[in-house]
Length: 196
Image (tube, rainbow, N blue to C red; front, top):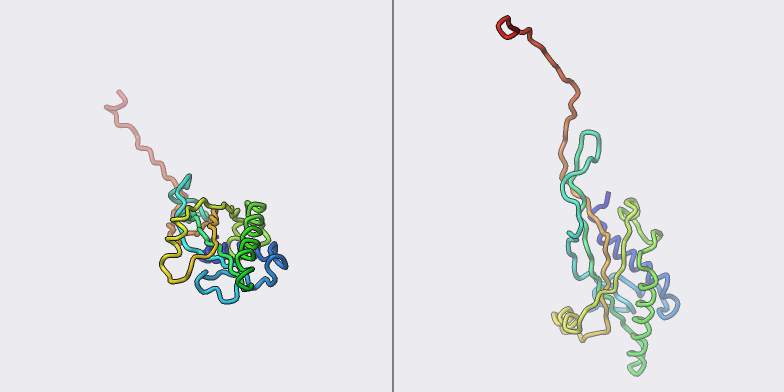
């Protein structure tokens, strides 16, 4: 069963994929790649922030499925998750932009090379469920990016959006059903006038 922890499990899987492939170069320390708001980056060099969750209704089956012999459960709901990936540099001012470009370039390369998150990065309910979490680089206009950043006084930093698909969360809604176990058939003798 895919639990409500699927969102954080998907985020952690994305972080671990990037940590394994971006360290020690161009990011020196694994812990500086984190699930974190880009506005509170502290010592992070790459932040991954979930900013939108939407239900994926395309091709989704509705209704109940047979969970056990006498139990039916509502089918899981599928979600698409959008993450904002932002580069941060602690380099001197004259090197900062180039450092951020290198981090973003390396992250883009890793994500294009891994269109599906390897199972070794999945944990919890995503791992138990054998989920296939797909990674897509989302086309995002400059206006959309600025809208994401406009709600704060923080200056815009180089960012891009990643879409994760294939995230499911099970429902707790279920219903008990009973199978037909006995059938009684009775016959009545025909009356005289019916037989003639």
